[in-house]
Image (cartoon, rainbow, N blue to C red; front, side):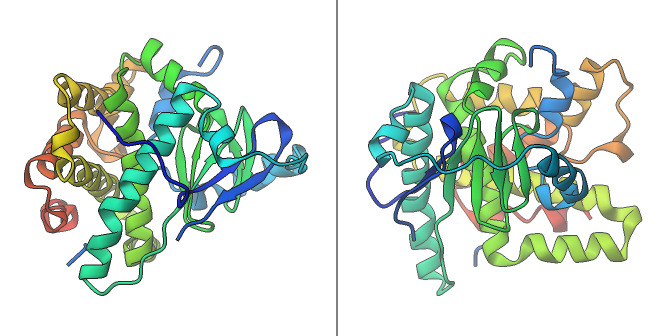
Length: 287
């Protein structure tokens, strides 16, 4: 996918190398020894707030990195090709979603992108590579260890630039849900109806997939041959049924938390084809 270079308005924080560097500005919508299934099951939208107990325990064992100087926005976004690609995607996502919020007269706040290596810290607790990319609603942060993209390609068979920006766009979808209050309402419903917790989680994740598709659909002139196939392949590889089979387990729908391969492809495709966020009501469709 052809993305313009990032601009200085994006909000990036770099925790790599033991440092913590706050950078930039900001500001109708609805693994080696790590088991691959564990990585992928947590990719694309796990809500760290649901894991606070575990994360806080880990955090007490590994203190947060101390500030060790500064780095420019350009240095952090140019640390490697994946970093630049992520910054470019963030800039495009901001430029796509902010006007939609403004048109709907809904307050908008751009998220921050946080790079870390192996271990880091977030408003939701510790950040670890085994978690995969995730969104933290407590600090509006999208957390990424870019080494994950190599694992995603080599170990999960989900490579390509569009597959990687799909990761960013999905996590950004969770930011949209946070701004709209959808995530908060889902957590309340899960607490009131524990038996529906997984179904609600699936609806939330599939909506983030659809929002990712909406962003891509609104930037269709930037899509290159093969991009959509890369996205669909990635969506298939991180479907709950695919992951269960890879882990040697029989797929059981009651145990799904992110949606089947077919569902993830369906909702990503719906967003792509319609480019309309109002078509992303997964709750009405699934519940």
